[in-house]
Image (cartoon, rainbow, N blue to C red; front, side):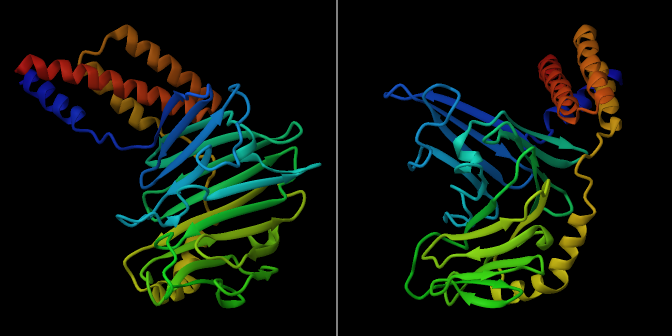
Length: 356
């Protein structure tokens, strides 16, 4: 009976979903001597595509040139399209300190990590500012809101000048009969024809199309009290949302969402009603520093013992986990959980071979 129980546990461990928040990184030496660094950052639903080219491993090389730098978000992208939130440059964060700098493009990241904390996908990034400060991004996706990513942008010892978001609702092409529209508190605008500028009092903004490609929409929720002006320039294909920041604001919170396969005219109207209000209230209640529950680790640890994982390796992982929890370092604790899962899966694979 014990052997059958271990077999059942082994099969269950091997059957665990491999799709969970993580970062895949690849580096490639180019013929010109430069190095390409590409990262795919996975959420529960969606992924980021981040790419840098560097000559010295310290600074990006000509990041203004196409294919040398990407900071894209593949989230709600319809099959066989390249639309939705920009898969190339969905977010920019500018500092103005002697010169204007998109901090994400002008420096290599100090950190990029992705973990699952109690089922919540948590992605962390860190970049230097121009003169000694630090930019931190935390992106979270909750099981209850798979069509939304919540992002906190934190400025430490510097001022953010402007925050940009970019999207291509439905598709990036430019059919003659399509109109790109933006809806704000000020009304609905065809941004193929006009530039929109206003001082915000409400937190909602929607992007969508009329006449063709009109079954999808992209949504942004922000904090109007922290933004002195919203600008959406007249465009052909890509829509740029420019949020000019008030000074001395330490953090900015955003909700980034989408809706597909539904008449945009209907979903946008509902977004400016109950749907948007519900997401905004959820965002306002987020604990941006969630604590890891120890229950999952303890259960996994007991499973590992039953699978016969080496006691010394188990003790080492538990020491890492306990130290991380004592420091409140959720990233290190999550990494220890991943290490424990890897040990379990290795033992499970070995255990299954014993039954063959």
